[in-house]
Image 1 (cartoon, rainbow, N blue to C red):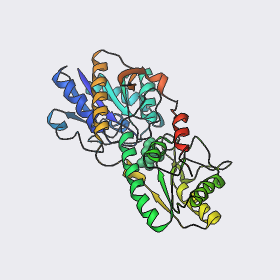
Image 2 (tube, helix red, strand yellow):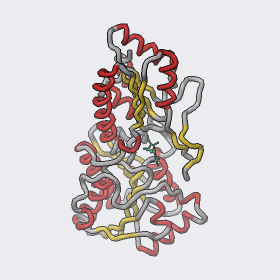
Image 3 (tube, rainbow, N blue to C red):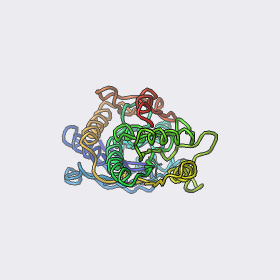
Image 4 (tube, rainbow, N blue to C red):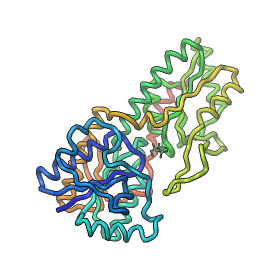
Length: 342
Ligand code: F6P
């Protein structure tokens, strides 16, 4: 049996660990032939394939990025896209595809199921906002990087008596901001799920000053917006899945704080540093478990499902229950974080 594997959407540390697990178990245990599909759905639309053997996945466990590349190609935005995919898969003898992706990529996998493409999904995104799984791989690494950034900002903020703002990724949910903010001892955490009030943020900073703490650390998710206002976008152009590019809320906030309190405020946008480089040990293990579970699902012919982590167990859930939904931050966790605000 010939199995394809692709990674789509924004990369996340751990993709290579998934690919390695799929290839190793697929070849060693099941005798499959594994085909790498280049750059997400683009590769199958354009028949851009390469055979993956044990050698091609050797030495990649710890590497960030994706040996297959990735893209935000949406086949449903291309002339006869789905039909071309079915035709190219048939021609190449690909019987099923392991799809590593976030909501957009997995939504395509679900819809392609209706055209007859057999898919199994693997939940990937640093944003951790996929429904049906406690954790997506890549998130733990992003949180670790953001936490380290906060530790570093802490010492310089303290020395200069400044307000430091760290803008992290998270378009629609504030998982990275929340967990890194708790781990890094943030004095305020602003997330898309809870529009923020500038005056309240300034109150937190003033409260700290009254306690003799003349520096503050604020974490803001890129998709956070002020109460009654709109998200701050970097550019109005949208990708093939209709997403706008966020960016700039940190600077907006910094200016407002300086206006309201007259305290020097500096801004750091962490950006793609959160996505690049080696996965943490946690993400390597999770991605490996996901890859093994995905090829096992293929072997059991359980298509149209996504592997997931629930508690400490790897399970699978129907793709139709996952796509189009969003896992917002745990508000109980936000309550815990807010004890430390101000
Ligand atoms: O969806 C994951 C994510 O990292 C978001 O947090 C971020 O807004 C987006 O991808 C950035 O994507 P790109 O690298 O395509 O600009």
